[in-house]
Structures are given as C-alpha cells and as structure tokens.
Image (cartoon, rainbow, N blue to C red; front, side, top):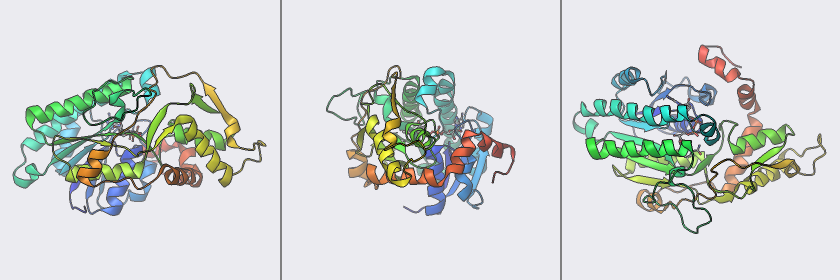
Length: 359
Ligand code: NAD
C-alpha cells in the first residue's frame, strides 16, 4: 500500500491524527500536510519525531476558515483529504456544546465546500483518484443497552450526546456531498481508541496519571458500561486502507473485537502498574484500592459494539493488537513519556505554538 501521494490530514496534532501523521511519514513515501487549529487537544510535541521530515508540512488553520482552506488546498494539491479535526470529548460537549456544533458540523461543511471546489477543477486521474475520508465514531449509532447485537454500517443513527449528535450530523453532510455533488467520499465509524499520546482527560491516560500520583481513580456509575477498544495504530492502518482501497460512497465500521467494561479497563491498568511500579509510597497492595465510583455522566450509553466484518472481508484489514498486548504497550509508553504528560499538565505544551522551544 505504499504510494507517493500528497495527503492532507485535518486534526493531525490530535491523538489519532498525530498517530496517522507519524505512521504516514515513517512507513510510506507520502507527503503529509497537517492542517490543525491547535485547540487545547492539539499538541505539536506529539509530532517531534517527524517535525523535520522534508515530506511534512504543518499549517495552523481552523477548518472554519474558508479562505485559509482554499489556499492550503491550492498550494499543496492533495490527492487525499483525511478529515479528523473535531472537538472529541463527550464530557466537554455536555458542559459546552457550542464548539462541537461549530467545528464538527459547520467546520465539516466549510471543509466539504472547499474540497468540492478544489476537486471539481481537477482533471484526469488526479480528479478520478481523489478521495475525501471522513473519520467518525461508533457513538453516532447510540446505545446497544445490553442487546446482544452489534452496530453494522446500516444501523440507524441514534446519538445520545452533543458530541455524537454533532458527529452524526457531519456524517450526513458528507453523504449528501457524495449524493448531490459526487464528491468521492468514504466514511469510517470507529470504536474507542487507546494508545500513546492520548490527551489525559480521556479514561485510560487519566487513570494511569492518577494512579501514578496516588490519586483516586474515578469510575462513572457502576463501571459496567461496555466499550469496544481499538489500539490507535490499528485504527490509522484501517484509515489508510479505506482511503486507498475503499469503495467511494461507502461506510466502513472499524472495531477491535475487544468488548470490555470500563471497570475492567481500570483494573487492567492497575494490574499492569502493580507489576511495573508497585506502590510502596502509599502502602497500597494494588492500585485497585484507589478506585472510586462517582455519579454517572448524563445520557451515558451502556454498550457500544462494532461488527467489523465488512472492512475485514472486503479490504483485508485486521487489528494487530489484542486488548492485553495494546494495554501493556500503552501503560509502558506513558511511564516512559512522563515529560510529555507533565508538559500538558503544566500547560507548557502550548508554548511551542508561539515558538518557544521545549526541552
Ligand atoms: P483529539 O481531540 O485528540 O484531536 C482533535 C484535533 O483536531 C486536535 O489536534 C485539534 O487541535 C484539532 N481541531 C479541533 N478543532 C479544529 C478546527 N476547528 N480546525 C482545525 N483543527 C481543529 O481527537 P481524536 O481522539 O484524535 O479524534 C480524532 C477524530 O477521530 C475525531 O473526528 C473523532 O470524532 C474521531 N474518533 C475518535 C475516537 C477516539 O476514541 N478518540 C474514536 C472514533 C472516532
């Protein structure tokens, strides 16, 4: 699947976007144009390993800025646009949904318009082979609530939170730009990701960080909410597979076949930490003693589970990591990269945006 294309990635300084940018630059011949506004979750320190790669271009641009988008498209002439830029944290969407509507819906609309204008002026194979990949979530399908079935690509949309509703809206816009304007789009709906470089507000890095600091490990409700977890590198390989081999206009569900209860995720982290860094300071027999149940999140979905048969059988993608191996790698990565976490916690990761070199 090695190609020599120009790939414009939106949201490439985020958790999944930075994994995608690193993967593309370290494993393929493609040129990568990273378009990112650098919100609180955009972190250039996640891209240090590729920052000086001659095939890497970074542009600090808001996807709601149509003039800047137009310029970056015309200047770089991408063959593929992979759209990951979004507000992504469910709790933040409950506290303040406005940014979610703005970036996830309005921003996707503005991006679609600019990409359409750019694509319509292309010719020949550059036009025929162009692809717009929209990266979405399984949360658009809502909640399986104990039912024994799985989300398939045709499952009805039934989003619960402002986040998932905004992502659902963006999926509809993308499909409409295919049906109405024939823009060659592809959509992916993926389950929960985990792995290195995830912003520490999300469950897994939050728990690792709290445990290291001897703080309580908060679990929403009874902790029995089930999520299907996918290692982030498996996700970016799936995204590239869909962008290069997927059928235009189609949707592909991506999941890891790892249905795990939230409480089991936290216990798994504690068990790994118990072996790697047994806590002597706080006299804990196990980090599990720090677990604390807190009031549930409003509208909290009980179960998400993905049927990934389509992408496996039609495109030949398979996840490589089991939950066990992926979690081991993830916990080890955070322990080995505490300065990355520290720079987020003390806010210094933002200084790099204004040109201050961080050691
Ligand atoms: P993230 O919050 O870590 O990263 C989002 C990135 O988008 C950041 O770098 C941010 O600066 C950038 N961004 C935000 N608003 C922008 C704007 N207006 N213009 C340009 N850039 C902007 O999110 P993530 O976890 O990496 O998720 C990436 C995508 O994958 C999102 O679309 C999300 O909905 C989707 N997704 C995430 C998961 C998951 O488990 N994290 C699962 C399925 C799908």
